Amino acid sequence: MITIGGRAHNLDETLAACELGLPFIEISLDDPVTVSGWMPKLLELKNDRGIIFLAHYPNEDNPFDVAILRDKFVPRIKALMDLSRQLGIQKATLHFWIDKRWASAELISGKLEILSRIVHYGNDSGIMVCIENLSERADSFAPAFEAIPDLKMTLDIGHAQLLARQNTSFRFIEEHFSRIAHIHVHDNRGGTGVKDDLHLPLGEGLVDYQKILKSLLDKGYDSTITMEVKIKDMPRTKQILDDYLRNAHII
Image (cartoon, rainbow, N blue to C red; front, side, top):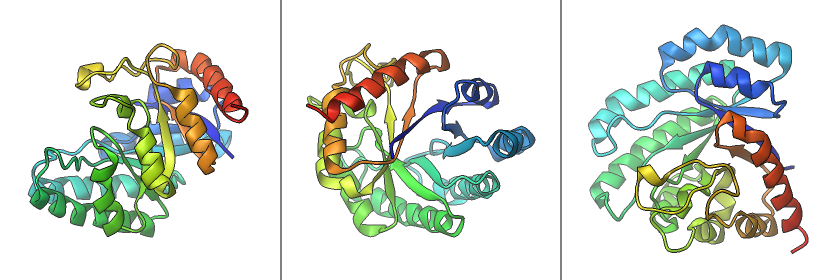
């Protein structure tokens, strides 16, 4: 069953998103010390209000330095996974940049060893690790999926509109559908940089969500979708998303 939740970047946004009655909140867990301070309130939301949490882990400290990733990033992720386990989190999204157009084969090889460790620790913690597409195209993820059998994917449909003539979601769906375990939705007008990653409400950009969602449904997608838009834009985005999903079944 497809379930639609919302993204929260901090505790205040989490509290605001909970008031919308969404079935889950995908919360940014960046710093173990900060998250530890949130734990009493998050556990209250989980235990007293039945809120389900998904995790969104931090960006890499330095995506070009394997030593920094090994010595600083991995321990940070493990600490966040330990906290995630207390919250009953079973699915987590991770940015781990492996775009072969700009990253060397040697760098990618080193990073995949680290990613494998993270996925293994996630397995031990009961957490499914999903790598999110940033600038990568489908062929950049192929080596990771081949090397790490338990690695899953968060398909960020908005990111897939950037640095591409056609939204790259179609190729991810075609080539890696079995790995897609989570989806992020937000809109933009295309572009080539971070400044173009606008996270607009659905319908305010160029992304052909109706066609992309139909491709996913035709393949049998039946899992979670996070709205990565501002809290105030979630009700309108949820309505549009529901319409797209409904129409995708009849087109």
